[in-house]
Length: 127
Image 1 (tube, helix red, strand yellow):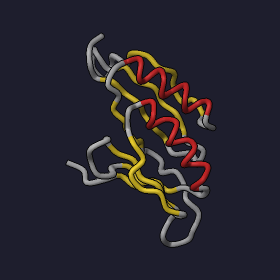
Image 2 (spheres, rainbow, N blue to C red):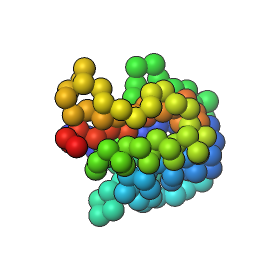
Image 3 (cartoon, one colour):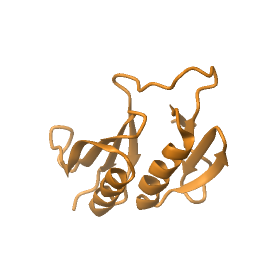
């Protein structure tokens, strides 16, 4: 359904360290690396998640109500990605756990990246 998702950052080097750590825990790879942007995706696919300095040269800001959802292969990947996010400058917005109000198998964690963008790491599979 989506071609890609773009998230703004004011410090690409800092964002690269954060997203390298989180996406590695999810089995994703860095596909592009530029001074003003970095992109991640599935190992054999094209980039799906771009972290960029805004083209208008204004400061990046987190959007209220916007969440980037990253799919995890299993619940332990959610746990690893959350731990990686915390170790890489992220802020906890919800520790890993079941959120059955979404559906019975929704196991997720919520973090903020160093620029304040909200990221959900989720596994939809049963145990």
